[in-house]
Image 1 (cartoon, rainbow, N blue to C red):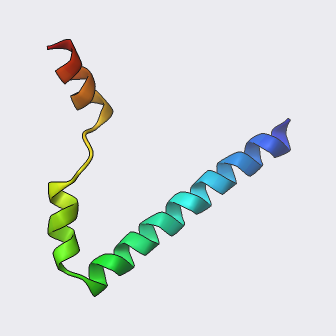
Image 2 (image 1 turned 135 degrees about the horizontal axis):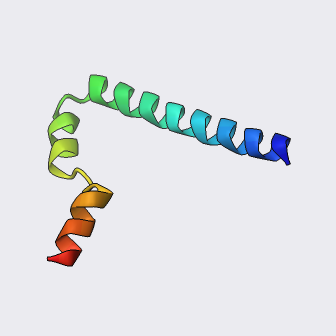
Length: 54
């Protein structure tokens, strides 16, 4: 059970790290992408939750 949990956590960590690295490289190559990312930023869970209550 422990190896499965450790493997899952390691896989998630590696995937997130690779995604962040690809995003960083994209921002360095294309400076306009920073503004596009800011404009299209996903709402956080708490913002979505607050909007659904109101």
